Image 1 (cartoon, rainbow, N blue to C red):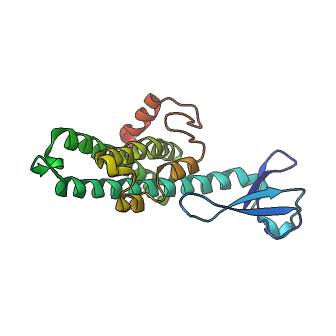
Image 2 (image 1 turned 60 degrees about the vertical axis):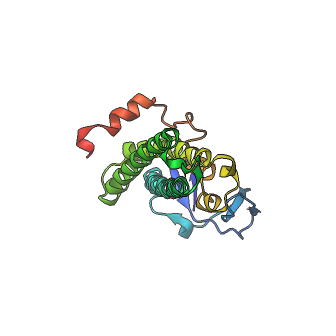
Image 3 (image 1 turned 45 degrees about the vertical axis):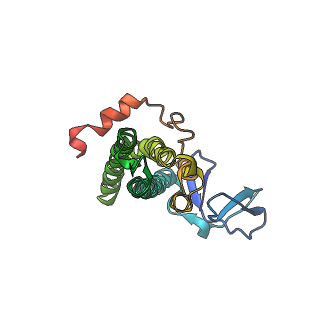
Length: 219
């Protein structure tokens, strides 16, 4: 499915055969081993049967798709961050230093507690976005909030997990398995997000997102 601007300035959605003339699809090698391709279109023509829905309503259809894809990516970030924190908690309980588990030290459990709070906020806003989408209600703001936290909070949680593992944080097999899809791959896939802290695609500041998040009529 390819979105494109039509001659009258509207956005249409079109089915494009990757084997059609003018279409070039190149396999890409990415860090999480997921299937990705680089699509290049050169004067590609499609038939009337390849037009999805009303071409004049393509923008709304595209927004429908993007919001649900974004919410799905946010849910994946919840799973990645949750798994990372669970692995870290287990490690803190079994790894001993000075004849006691390192998880009993204040520096460890304070950092882990902060990560847990961020994880639960991410979980909350993702569920809120998913709930509104499932109810077919307007969810644009809720998806934007979830996307913001999926970028920042998941980043903070997984970094805390790596740091709390100490020197083996960059090498431990279990942690790497849990974070396979992780962080930068998912965050980069979030539409319009970009790097942590920048690239909010609607130009709003963090305070405005907070106002949306804590608006009582959204819960």
